[in-house]
Figure 1 (cartoon, rainbow over the protein chains, first blue to last red):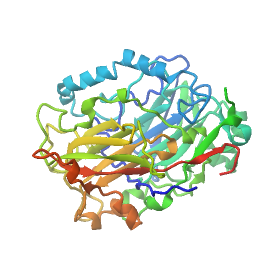
Figure 2: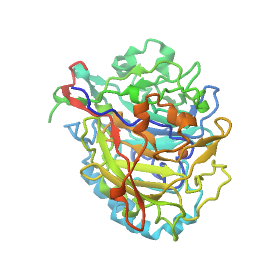
Figure 3: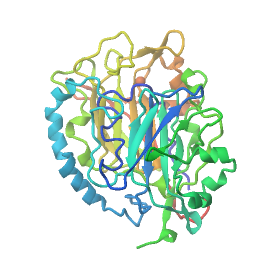
Figure 4: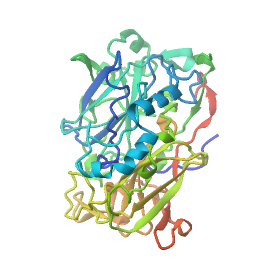
Length: 239
Length: 241
Ligand SMILES: [Fe+3]
């Protein structure tokens, strides 16, 4: 059975996605709220084929929770933290939902006051966040090509053949000059054994290429640089 | 609780023929930003067939009206822009986040990187969002953006366009695209539009004028349906795709 309708084509995200009220969310890098016990900071830089930082990329992440589960209908196990509880808490804590609607009506002046909003961490739209785990992260790169996330390490995820995939984070890279998003994965440096048996990592024979997918422990967090081209080009996937 | 062997996962077949040629030479910024090595296949597992589920409480009523974000109204031709988000099986994609951003009526973005010598509009930012209803419908009120020059080649102008960002319901469905307006004389010289090599696919980026959604004495209507990849029937995860 195939699909019956061809898809709408991809186009570049362009250089201006960070205008106020557009793609950057003020809480975008927070897959979990600041102060969450066990949270890890993952950061890195995006480089072009000349080794120059890419200051206008948008990095997005999607990952399982610490038990390797997803809050999604296609994961029948469900999330380890019920999503409804998370959403309710988000409304109470972050003042989103109905509160945000009221805020919008009264906040035009506030946004006028900050016309330069946009870019990583700038004031702007909040996606809405409570004390729970969101799975999704979004961060535009800054002038040094740097992005960051605060998250919890995902658990291993079931793999075809009743195996397990090593803990991983799926990453989308979008930028001016890229007509299609590209996809890569972040693996964890403290998972040597599970990484070795991971059904995706283990198919990459060249150690240097495999290494581009494993984050590096640094300054109490993890570093994951993305090279769009060049001798240390990151491994990208066709998903 | 079902264990991993009970998982039935959908499969989202790719539609490479509809998408741009990645390093399309006419768009010069691709040169240093398009990976050189062939992409590696990534089997679609749980991480790829799941994605964020958005509640309607995440966006406010006014987020979809770009003409009411400031004290006054923006200049320009007011439009109602609506449509459906569908998957490749023709099924609506409900409860999914739709984000858009655009230049103002003069062709200028409210972004420090935009050096076009055209006026900013104090009453227009250019960003908006909504979540689709149970039938996959979305609806925005905005103004028609202007064309703008860029430095890709001599006397280069982008056709008027609105940028869209879609999540769908799975990581595989993620799409960022641009919507164009019917009959734009700038199509022929725009390498971003023409990076999509398939003529029929290019037409799918152009909205339709829609008299039915026009609001008399107030705004013109345009319709733009967006088709994301569709899932095939669920298969046991240990079956080969
Ligand atoms: Fe644009």
